[in-house]
Length: 305
Image (cartoon, rainbow, N blue to C red; front, side, top):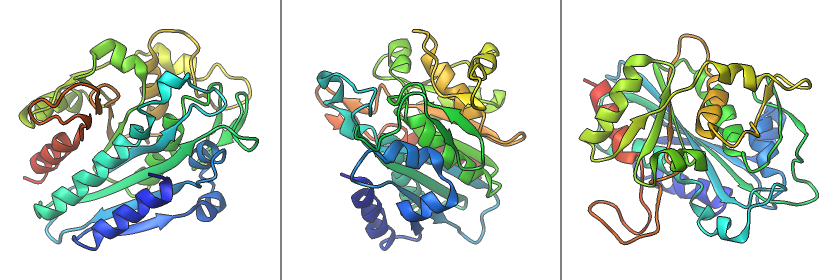
């Protein structure tokens, strides 16, 4: 699966539903200043895509925005992973798959809620054209980011997606990503981490997940993250924290910097449960699991009442 073939899968699926689809190719992304997505994808011979999926039922009063990380293969880029760390990296697009699956299911169920899903698709590969540690990227919307580790790429594509989604004025924005190994260390491989700028949503999402048959746990973004994000002297934000702890909170704090004041936001780090290396169990198959799909559908159901 590559960015373009993933995009074409969504185009084909949209023809069977009430979801409309728009695909931005690399030429358009470059021209509009999507520095995060392009910065991650430019090392690959398979160029990036940003796919927008829209479901607009007539009687909807709430607008839910979903943003998914879609790294179709993550080698780590120039900050390359060891061979054993790449084995499951075709599944680094699980966040994008989750938001796409969710919007198609919501449309099929004809839920009375407007949903827009943004899938940020790129392949993170090393080459002479790849982003280098120490490079500064200008993100969509104008913020600058110093890249310190090209294997922390998911937050870069998500940031561009969040900025795009926020510009449409949704009532609620949720991003979904296999974002950090640190979240797996904290919560294991069955539980997703929930981060939010809204106390009620932060508490409510794990309960929504439980009702949908999934496991999620609220995680913090400590106040000192803001200070760490702005230690760079050559950009607005530092993309990576070299400290060997708090990586999931740092990544969530980075994403929060792209969420406008007043917009309710949650980040779901599904790095643990997105891929099952063991045997099938209950609803969970071997391989890609569809983590967060049921939770997003349950959230849309709750918000459409």
